[in-house]
Length: 283
Ligand SMILES: Nc1ncnc2c1ncn2[C@@H]1O[C@H](COP(=O)(O)OP(=O)(O)OP(=O)(O)O)[C@@H](O)[C@H]1O
Ligand SMILES: [Mg+2]
Image 1 (cartoon, rainbow, N blue to C red):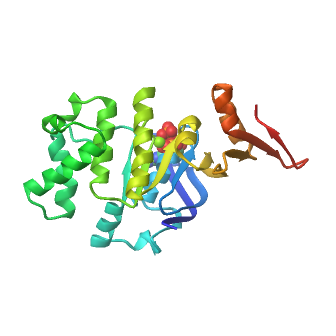
Image 2: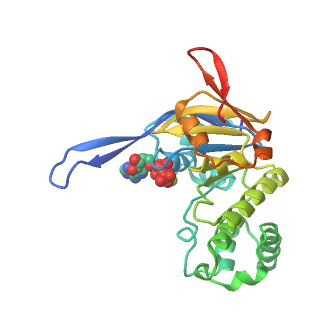
Image 3: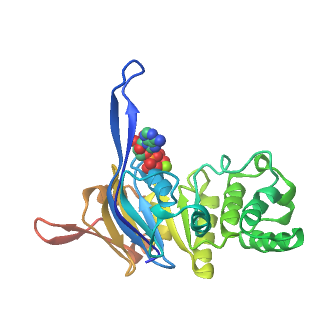
């Protein structure tokens, strides 16, 4: 296992009103446990507010856990400080939904892409340029954008810059938190295709988080379903069949648009009923 997560809990405190000191506890994550294998693309799907971004922040140690344990390559990340934390952050990259806010608007794309290389390696200008050039090509961006500013790029291009920046550090795990949600269908499809290729080529694990079951289903073999801070179901579809037991997962799958009958035949969705031990087809 590349990463293992044990019984994660995260509570936030929120003031009930401006006038009182009383606080309410928001249970953002509750008893979340799962593993990410080397070289796999695993998905997390769940509605808005179910705790997906809270989970991404915990996984890269951006916040302190309320309780639980996260193990990366056999080590508890809680202990990581200084250079160990720096190496962990290099190995474990996260990209968030809002492509613009993660790109400094006063930096050119060249500055943005040089920054991680400057932080982690000691390279001269020419060396940096040649590494950036190769990676830009890989994410299908033109070299000409290097002298432009983020606001002059399209949403899809900005998200490619974010992917490029993460890949420059050759991470072992890439966490994608709703990274295609602001894009149109064509831009979405090309980013998903790119992630699939990068996973094969760089042997990099990807945790792909989205509220959209259709998108997650396209890219992941294993899908974890999250509801109100809990993982309610894990579906493995490597044999082309989705075996569902939880009513919330059934709702998510039922909301998918019906595709062409030929496509439907390739992926069957079976719902397992615990009461009578029977399986039935969703459609
Ligand atoms: N810093 C915080 N302080 C207080 N509550 C928070 C904080 N961050 C998240 N929450 C709450 O935790 C819950 C989970 O939020 P989170 O952003 O993780 O959901 P999400 O699944 O990523 O939603 P979306 O799909 O809309 O991005 C929400 O109820 C949210 O209001
Ligand atoms: Mg979120």
